[in-house]
Image (cartoon, rainbow, N blue to C red; front, side, top):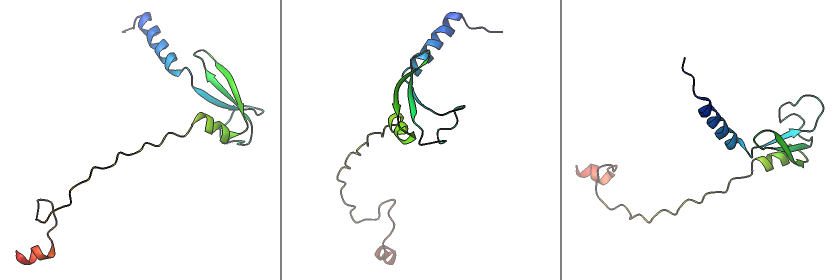
Amino acid sequence: MNEEPLEEWARRREERRALSKGKLRAVPLTEGPHRGAHVEPEAPRVIQEWDGTQWVTVGLVGDLAAAKALLHPPQPVEEKPAEWDRPPLSKGRGRHRKPSPADERDA
C-alpha cells in the first residue's frame, strides 16, 4: 500500500484551505434545521464568511433576493471588439460560393 508522506498531505490540505478562504454563504434565521435556500424566501439571512477554520458572521440581509445579490453580484458585460471592415465579396465563382442563376445558364 502506497502512503503519501505527512508533509505532502499537510501541504495539499493548506492549499485547499487557502483556496476556500473568503467564501460567503447565507444562512436563514428560522426555527428548526436549515433547509433549501428557496424555503421561506422572505426570512432574513445571516451572511457568513469562511476564514479557513470556521464560519464568521459578517452581515445581515433582509431576504433571499438581497442575499443572492450580495453573494452573486452581476458580472461586468464584456464588450465585443468591433469587427474589422471586411472587403465586399467580388464577382466570381470562388471555391465555396453558390453559383448565381446567371452562372448556371452560362455553364
